[in-house]
Image (cartoon, rainbow, N blue to C red):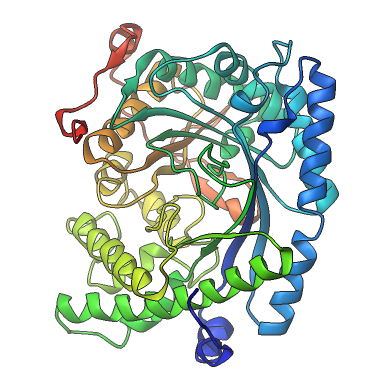
Length: 451
């Protein structure tokens, strides 16, 4: 295990005090594969009992580390085995009972989100998968802290277009039932990873241990501040500056992860290097890209700037920790980044440009608010486009899209807290209905044949 000391953290005090550096989340992954039972009430009870037992000290330990080291730890969260797997033996069509058990457990231990109301259907749906997906609207609208995700595609399996079509309808139903709010807790993935600590897409993968601690670091404001000292310098200098800054950020995350692991008696899993913005001024990935010389994020050159940023962050991070995982890239959510909100509101940032940017970052179309009358087929087609980028490029991509009932282009919606607010973005209105209606599966690409 890498030896760390607090002197390395003391060097970051200026970053913490003035540049929004923080640990964005400590996430405890918990296996609930042993909680299954034919009686759904018994199964739900087992889930509640195990989660509350395993995570009872998570928040307290996080707060202790925060006080002792002076490092802000914004969120303490939990992820569990995908419910579609853990609860498939239960004799019920309505899986929202398990969502309520997760919600009650999250509330009891004091975490703000719990992820894992999830299914992995990249090649096809089992009975449990179908039941879970159909239960998503009721599950998300009937709970406060539960997050849901569905993996629809992978490089090895291709794209499950039947599931893509179904998810378009599920997102629309969730939006109609919740005024759009529920969709902020729902992610459609391609190549989902098993150790992601960030919500709303976190789940505890089947290859993970019984219990594990994963940490997500952040620091867009720190990178932006470092680049302000590079005015007029070449891209080589910009890349090197970002790399060195990411190294320091990741070392702090490694220390926190190791401390949490030791105090909780739970194995340390990974540090996720993602730059995760917030709506706060000065904590924006868009600001970093503009500091490189773009008049506005969304301008020509944005994708190239994002590629440089993403690569430099990874290079700096892997030198600081041998346990890098999760998504580890730059998040570009519209509603959670003040600079992205500004660019979208001015028309400089479009969905099509965002899609191009996702070719070189790890997250995808994230927190995109669209008109409430956007059709289910259009939503499915947007998901399919993004899934194709992930499938062909052998990377994780995702879609968190929010059709807001009663809203149209130019309106604004406020999600509150870390979710921020967003302008309603224009969607291409040419119909993909016949394309989505074909169903079936888009085959895996040739580059999947690596054995």
